[in-house]
Length: 131
Image (cartoon, rainbow, N blue to C red):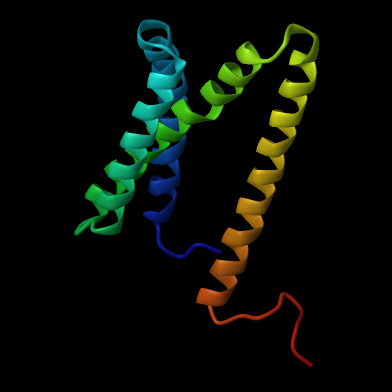
């Protein structure tokens, strides 16, 4: 389990950021356009990654995670909507389904990769008990 009592705070920051980012990105997309909203999300995500990497305190790390979540919330739905809007009317359903499937597969691959890296960092090579 997680032994650091502050660890869940980082996850909460990302979750709250994603929720706020989804709402904010919708407003930005309506005002500026979807492509601009996606670009702005990528700029914010890049900045949050740099700040997270060089954070000198937990509070800075937590705020950077929140801004990263804000960017992810904005970058999750806008590309799907943009692609479906530009698809031929007869194939919009196929586009939406395919993109949603890739989003789900990407999420699972991210989870598995994150788990493998965590196990490697912990010095574990397998989930099985050694015999």
